[in-house]
Image (cartoon, rainbow, N blue to C red; front, top):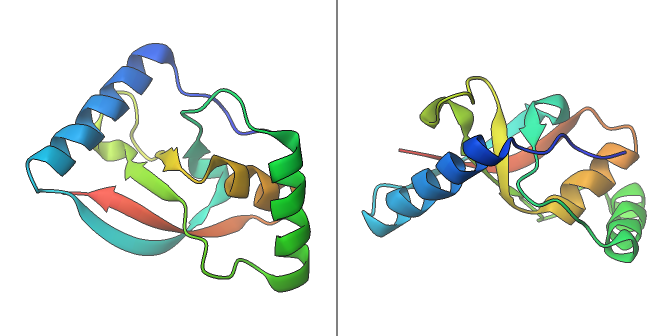
Amino acid sequence: MGLPLADPVVLADVQHTAWTLVREGKAKLEEHTVPIGDLVATQAVVDRERVAQDEAGYRENGQGDERPLVLDGNLVDGGKGLLFLLSGHHHSVAVANTGATELRVQVMTR
């Protein structure tokens, strides 16, 4: 299973917004459990072996301490209600592959 990939124009806005929040010291991180169906990838390729390792680990131990980082899509044009993965693509795909419907993430907002 894969995750939908962000449109290139939206992706540029996601990257710009995330870096602007970081540079200006305005980024806030909140931990939430979110529907996997709301996640949008910003990385086109994931390594199958890493995904398989993460999937096996998730099946055996649950999510553990891994918290993918996502940008609140409400901060970008065309992203309302979505969450854009900034890091944690391999883990997110692995969890989705298990059939899980939710994932604990860190949401970057302002």
